[in-house]
Length: 111
Length: 113
Image 1 (tube, rainbow over the protein chains, first blue to last red):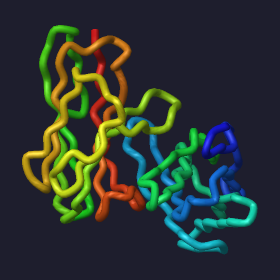
Image 2 (image 1 turned 180 degrees about the vertical axis):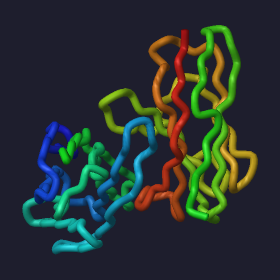
Image 3 (image 1 turned 135 degrees about the horizontal axis):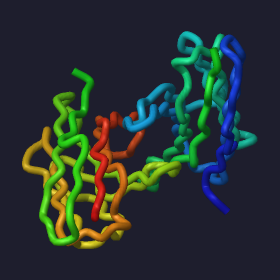
């Protein structure tokens, strides 16, 4: 079993839609949860970072963590064509020095 | 300055060549990393440097040789690579070495012929 499973996509939505991207993880020892955005032929860019259950909002982006279900989500409101990218979830267990990426979900937002 | 700068952006090399990838950051981060990323796959960790010392080598073949000349610079020396080593090579840095909040460079797209 993979340590992190990410909804594979690809996902195609019209401009203005609400997008939900999701990952589940298997080990409750993971403490930190990140979402990275990667444009084609570029390096990943850290979008959201959280370490507790609940919601964290930054502009049009909301990261949600449910530690009891081992489930993390990224919501994008009012999606824009510029949001078209691959989104990677990542989890970190600092005690074990372990970090794992999901496989990524490719999102296309159509004008 | 929140940038990680990687050079070159593209590299084509033969299997007998020796080349180097370079990475630089000026954020005062104490950990630097090399990742390898194949198309449609997530980044895979290769090496971790913490306070300029190699702390993690993820069983990477010896044809890849990392070097950290100082706290701002990271190199990856390449020698006798195979075509299957063709990939995007990403450098990243972070404040600590526990890999939260990674700052990535744009990568070097490497093709081995």
